[in-house]
Length: 335
Image (cartoon, rainbow, N blue to C red; front, side):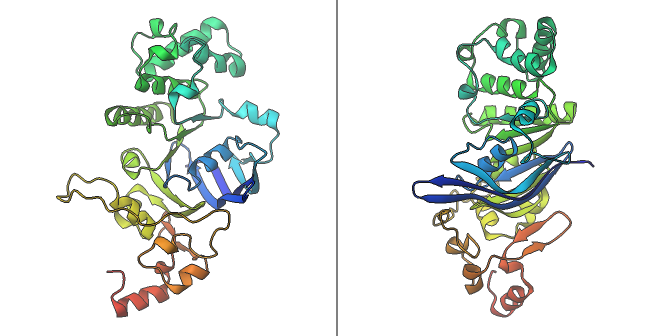
């Protein structure tokens, strides 16, 4: 499979009156053509900052990409000019944002908003743009597209608005689609429909997808691989099976324990106690140490080695060090 995106040692900071926030701290991941990668983690872990960095949408000032590279088909997006980046956005890489109402212009018809990108980037005629807009509306499941094309966003339900936002992101046939919390504002039934739609569109178009979410339950159906972020770092990554059934990092295990399960009799969810660390001055060791039930002295002092558990499964955790495993075997710790 072709590697369409590779992020290497990405660091993103924000200067504030209180100091410099190290929002993303050395993130590495890649995406293959036609693959869905889910980046998960609680609020404030750096997921959206990472996705906005790929799109070069980090406001500067106060933010900046302090280090690293973002290779899209071999081209480093960190180094391309603003003019060239504008040509890439919407055509090669598109993004779906959290709230569909704020992503749509309330003063323009749905038709005007769908065809705007085509006219700007593809140089097609008005009639061609309209036909492509109608085809895209049918693809995302909008009924009566001819009539709906003339309507305004306030005439659509939340789920229908999200479908329009997806149509806008896909109309120029991008190779990469970034979906930032695309179902957060929707009820559970509509969430399922939107996620099913992503799978349908991917099969039909072959688009690669990065799905940003705080909810592991959301990605269970459509993700091929999962990267778990915490305090600006990817602390575990692997295939969907490896993360759901063989998770090694205590934070990943905590996220899984907080997902509602219909196959268990217990009603209570198991929360992760404590709060994430202050990213004005991140800890030298593992950032999860203060909340980890298995923390050792070394965890607080030195960031753990990057352990490769398989060709696809990686974790940053001292518990995977052979010395820790040996100690656990004698003491019974971690059982």
